[in-house]
Picture (cartoon, rainbow, N blue to C red):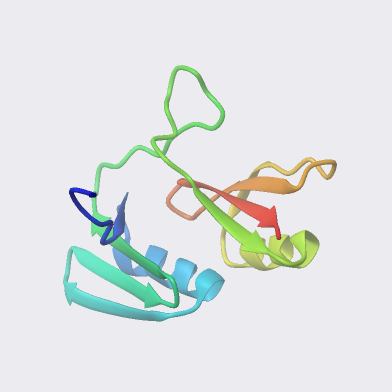
Length: 118
């Protein structure tokens, strides 16, 4: 029997509403802002929250000396199309080698995420 169930994944960011809007454009759903420092994204199969952290230092990827802390794997039907869309939204490429079934990007606050071919 589990002790708990996962409610939400929370990302620190200097700009909660901007980062929630980025992920809303990528994943869909609705953005709610119950407090100035806290924004939530609710969508089918996803609940993310974005917590204000003005002094957040983005992780370095890849780096054995600076942990990435976590990353999101996002399934997409077409890597090329998804890549151009996330780049237009403000993502930054980290590792986009074409010979793999996934590509790594940083969101506008610097958190790594992967687009993975379904």
